[in-house]
Length: 248
Ligand SMILES: *[C@@H]1O[C@H](CO)[C@@H](O)[C@H](O)[C@H]1NC(C)=O
Image (tube, rainbow, N blue to C red):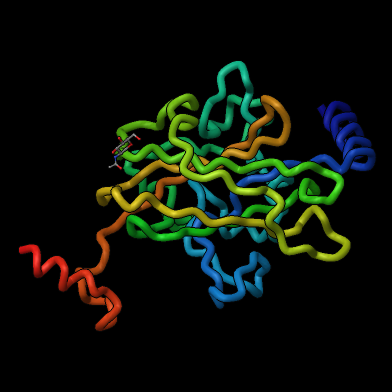
């Protein structure tokens, strides 16, 4: 066993040294900029308010390091089954357990990170580590945000997720960190469909690195009721109230 571990470790080292190959995951699924006019993904640019399922927020591992953590967060789907959310068993590279829990809150109570919550129609941002794949020499790879627009009692198949792509985000939207292309912070934003009723919706982050090579992260986005109409709208900002009144 020790021998085997050593062999695997040296093979892994040789691999790292020759190709610097590593893979990504959703690090934060509700990233809020300190200053919306200066959006960015470095620690100094914002804070995280929501995480993917069973995210080990207290691991003590620095940003971008959870691929060498056990269980790893970089889950690579096996094209033979395309298990949509890591179950810790399936996959070319199995990850942690990111299957839907019952109740959903089990994925977001200690020791895990908090659940992401928003309101319909709002923009929500997220971030991920570049893991050396945002360098100039590499082509752009995209992150697909897949989100069925109904609340479900179980996770959908990959086919259903893929039919419900609500955003395609450029993977290489990053803040360069000089000399460290691995821990470079990257991210993007998408708008939660305005038509959604309140409830928990499953969201999948799916990064395509090569043909048929996909990495995913899954979470449950809580869509809560918006503030009462008028409560936060400044006077004069919404002239249509008069139009609505006129029509009544
Ligand atoms: C959900 O998506 C379907 C198909 O695109 C659409 O017809 C339906 O109106 C959507 N429902 C909501 C609540 O957004």
